[in-house]
Length: 316
View: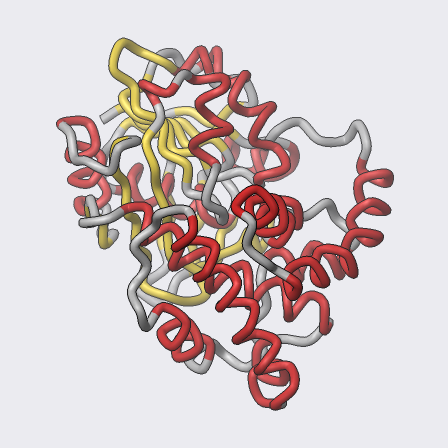
């Protein structure tokens, strides 16, 4: 397959490298020192499953250099998604599928504004990875997993082709029985744990260990579960219990990308996480006081970061 990965960071870089190693024609859309290192030396992956070096067919900052692709995997921050949705058009062929692998539940809707609903599927991933140096991605936890489906949740020839390509690359991949339930289950976990830990300025271990912060975390999950059900999503009855059990399996020093960005003074995905919960809860008439607090307490940091980075973002 011809596969473009728009945003070759920790997530996109890992999957792009794995697909390239498996022999697929992979285009990595990246920027800055990371892009230059990939061009010069390839993309190195550090992983508990074994390190490897991949050389994509093309690494570029300009999608127009790539030409039409069979699939576009989008792995940028939600803050960059509206811009990316417009920039990726040169990658579209007659039946290209665009799959977002982001944290959140409405990335497909944002992409559809630029790509058109007919091209956009739904997707999610589970992996802990980051750019550890220019031209290097470190896979630090979780067995890589990808779920994709068409907008209506169904399989198709193009979703099945991408699932097969990912499996050839050693990734657990599937079209799940209910992509919306899968998206919201992940959102319940990532948004709650990431937001509460960032607000506490502590990693997972201390937050889950103290009764007060553990209860805050549980209530944050309950809010998202209630919101999902109000929106017609069939979350399982044990969604929160499963989320808390997963939290207890996270390394004690584990932190989310949101937490990392807030501490570093970088623009984060706050508005796509707790901010999205607050917005969607208001629309659905569902209370969300914990996420309202998390959004409010982190918003000053977010605004300061955006002022500092204003004009320095290019959608990758």
